[in-house]
Structure formats: C-alpha cells, structure tokens
Image 1 (cartoon, rainbow, N blue to C red):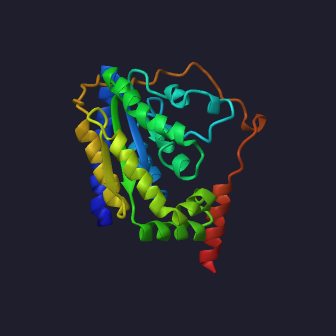
Image 2 (tube, rainbow, N blue to C red; image 1 turned 180 degrees about the vertical axis):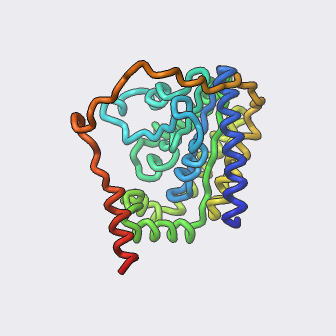
Image 3 (cartoon, rainbow, N blue to C red; image 1 turned 120 degrees about the vertical axis):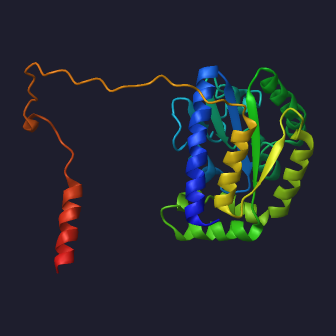
Length: 269
C-alpha cells in the first residue's frame, strides 16, 4: 500500500476512532478487543495506531506478564477479569487468555487437562461477557513463515528493537507447524456465534492496520456525539504577580541548544 495513501487513510480512520471513543464514553458502553497471532505479525504496531489519538484514561492496553506463583493457583481467567472495562472504557489485550491455547499449549506450560478445560470454558466465559453487554472483538494476525523470519532478522539487526526478540520468539520458528495446529484447534472450539474470530492477513503491515481498524469501526454501532462548544475564556488582567527569579529553581540543561550549535558549527566548516 503506497505510503501517502496509507497515511491519509489511517488518519481518517483514527479520526473515526476518536468519534467512536466519544460514543463509548457518552453511552457508557464497554469494548474489549483481543489481538492474537504469530510472533512479529504486527499486533503491537496495530494497537499503537488504534490508540494513538485516543484518551488513555478511557482506552487501556493490557499486556500481562508471566503469571506469578499465586496467579498460577487461581482460576485461569481470574487475573484477566480485573482488567475488563468499566462503563465508557475500551480495553485492548495485547495477547490475552488465549495464551493457554497458544504458547502454553505448544511449550507444555500447561497440562493437557488444563488445556482441555480452557477450550471448554473460554466460549462460556466470552458468552457471559457478551451477554453482559460488552462488545468483544477477537483478531488473529496471520503472517507467512518467510515474512516472520524477515522481521525477526530485522529486529536482530536493529539495536533499538532487539528487545522485541526473545528466546520464545526464536522457538516459534522451530515449532511453526505445531503452532499452526494449535491455532487450528483453538479456532474450532472458540470461534463461536457470540465471539467470532476475525483473521487479519498481516504480511503487509500497512494493509493489516487499515483493515483491522476499519473492521473494528464497522462492527461497533457507534453514532456521532454532539459535543458542547468550547470557547477559550479571555485571560483576566494580572494582579501584580511576579514570577520568582529563575535562579531559585533547578532547570533541565538546554541540551537542544547545544545540539543546534554543534550542527551549525559542523555546517559552517
């Protein structure tokens, strides 16, 4: 997708996301969006574009770490429940309870009994959310093995993004087919009329972002909200206040001016 067309389309969709959030706030709705898929499939970058212009007080990203020893003894869905939205909120899960059907299943981090229990309980859990009025959307990001490997290599070569590459990511290369089978089985059990899975072809990141945001907007029945007009008040006249001398305070050094001067000096040579 050409960059200029992508950027203009993305900006227009992001403006609609702002409108959607205003409707969610005004109507007291609750929205949960789950982002799952292959490692390096572009989930995080899509979430970033979704939330870029949203109010962070009402649009939260949830990316939970490995469960603690205590959490491992809880009902599996328990630690996710506290992150569900209240009225007027949007919650985006960067990976979710579906870890159990993916990495935990493939890497033997859960027992076969725990896995089977999850496949049975997940549709019930999600039906309860939907019946309570939550808008639940589930996106699976698919990427080809060749494109995934290219992105892994790109991260490996970039010191600014190397943190995105973990030993678990590298393991996914060796277990590509195992992950594929786990995903297929997960879809059979958890793609339900109450909470369908929507697959996102993500070899082209720009298209994946546009398609996901457009689908999300089209699936939430939001309406434009009339906002009250805001007018900046005239600043009142001063009453003799004088700012204390700057020397009394600690200031951040003006590093930016140092950079500018060094650049100008370099250009003049």
